[in-house]
Image (cartoon, rainbow, N blue to C red):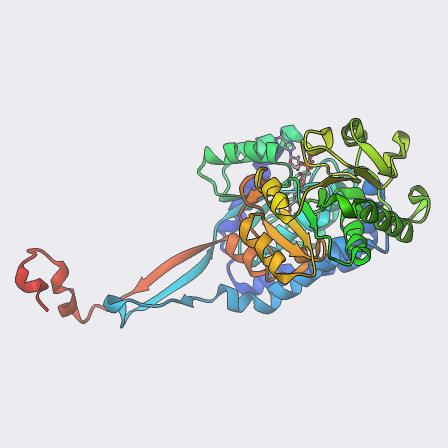
Length: 453
Ligand code: NAD
């Protein structure tokens, strides 16, 4: 039996004991997870520094504070989420009990990505624990230091039979995907997302696919460009542009392009100094393969800001590209790096057409002081989520479902959405054996007299 098979068998056996069903068990596990984050913050930070040069002070903001918030919410709300949910009755069930009973699915496979390796791997685990499932946790091999910390330390805090951690790369993940799960929760790129779904289909396993894509950012000419560009600079260059909901490209009218560039240049200097390479808060590209991929995207566009790079450090400066054409290399796939192309459009109509001509993105950003324009963009486009006049922060609102649509993914999570996503919402109807008279009409023989009431 392979290591992967063993992990799945162990989790399955643990689930079948039924010990993950009582809410007390789930709450105790969630509290242990919380303790892990607090007690092991130094290990977490050190691994992230090695993986992505993430700053020690910035790590809680982007990786662990959100997790702690989600744990606290789940602990406080679990009784409410897990309780039977009464629903509206129809005439024939007026005196019956009609309700939805959330129940655990079984064993969930969580496949994480490397860019925010804690956030995207542990957050689904919070949902899986809250919903009473077992889970096999597969962190990304690309963020190798984080993966090692997860493998070594998580079992010291959690029920290691119920939540085994399996490390490894593509062959190991493929071996896991051959096993039978009750749900697969995958975060990563759309190409592998398709492979995950294909593998899941062999066992009719439902999937949540948290994917990426090119998230557009439209800037209306009437907005305060200084504030808009400061927020966009933050959203784009945080984690060196390796954020699934980073604004991928800007759409704006030609008349404001120069000012947009200047404002972004100012904000880059404010956040990362004249020399981002020496700035603690500026991350690195995860590895040489991705470095080369991002560098190749710059080839046929004009650099307005940045462009410096150092392969030995996987460093690429915050870079703005101007007058980018829709057929430029940088517009062919998700950038996932610190390049910000600006494409000019004649106005919001063309921006909407441009967005709708492409795959549905994970996030859509619009900056404008005009509420009507914002509402119009929301009404006439589609995306996983939409955020006006800021970047990234919709991710932090637990009440909002987080997830993609179309090519950017399927299913959603965060807060109660995670609980629901990883539960079976079972429809339940409890009748009494009395009042048989009301059922007469449904029993054959179907005569006109029976229908005449
Ligand atoms: P990655 O390379 O770490 O892959 C993700 C996982 O898939 C890993 O655990 C890896 O082992 C596994 N994997 C890779 N190739 C495989 C294969 N051929 N067969 C089976 N498993 C395989 O991460 P990535 O895909 O480079 O991550 C970046 C992408 O993830 C971007 O597109 C980004 O937008 C997206 N992302 C989305 C979210 C979200 O919440 N929607 C969050 C983070 C990242």
